[in-house]
Amino acid sequence: MKETENYLFDFISRYMPLGEAEKIAIRESAVFRNYQKGELLLKQGQHSKDGYFVIKGCIRCYYVIEGEEKTTAFYTESETLSPLCSINQLPSEYYVSCVEDSLLLVSNPQMEKIMFEKFPRFESLCRILSEALLAKNQTSFANFKTSTPEQRYVNLLHTRPDLLQRVPQYQLASYLGITPESLSRMRTRLARRNK
Amino acid sequence: MKETENYLFDFISRYMPLGEAEKIAIRESAVFRNYQKGELLLKQGQHSKDGYFVIKGCIRCYYVIEGEEKTTAFYTESETLSPLCSINQLPSEYYVSCVEDSLLLVSNPQMEKIMFEKFPRFESLCRILSEALLAKNQTSFANFKTSTPEQRYVNLLHTRPDLLQRVPQYQLASYLGITPESLSRMRTRLARRNK
Image (cartoon, rainbow over the protein chains, first blue to last red):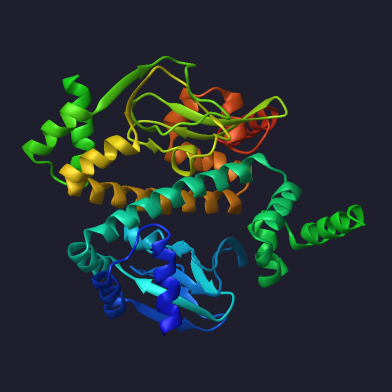
């Protein structure tokens, strides 16, 4: 437990130094939950107000379109997911599940409200983090639009090499916007070229 | 000027009611600027801390790749753009220019800091807006990944029909991830089908 808390404190400290009272408040109110590989955090059609911060593990978002899973995002250590349904209060359009056994910090607007009232600096932190995530997400989206599948794959090799080892190939393929067969051919081609 | 301020007040009021003191503070510190069609707000390689809220008009982000413009995003009335370079303090990877004559609210972190200190509620508002924009952006990205170019076009017809009239076809094509020729063929095909 101490290790988990320290992980969270270290993460927050990158953005703002934490006082003792703030650490105690986090310790008292933070909800950490363990999930097993394959476990569903959210289903299509479901309502939920929960957001997640990954302490350890990997979660993914996917749509089921004409019976087929389409993976759109992965979240690993120190990444945050606030599903759209937790914000617009409509039923979720997608699923969220665990690719690995995962340890997550779970929050909801009510818990946040209490924390922000006690410690307005936490709201500052959340604003700064959200703005940074938004700009990063817009850039990832732009990069996806302006690159070929092969460029996307090579980019992933450089920016998130761990992901290539951690997630099944069929999930990775739809994440890159291609079929598993295309991904397999691309890997063979790249391996040959790098010999 | 009064009309511009009222537009901004109306927008903010959707999220929180504004007090008189807050309105006065906004009036005194808000920087509204007019830009002409084609004017550049940001160049690739440039540093900038400015963020934009569109009161009137349309701005777009584009990359220049091998001499070719690749449009990745449009922002119209009531939409906000905080370019990545304003957050990570690295040179910009893309351009931002005006598709139409535009009236924008321009802000930077220093101006925001002063406002947040005087009116912490504004920081709340910015957090809420950023979180909502982030979730929306993640969903747009996911929709892009999981749909065909034709589905993306039809979706745009429903969600942002004005955009199709406001922006040149070649910009719209790369925004949809296709060539101008494909877009033209698609429009003809869809028009025939709907006859």
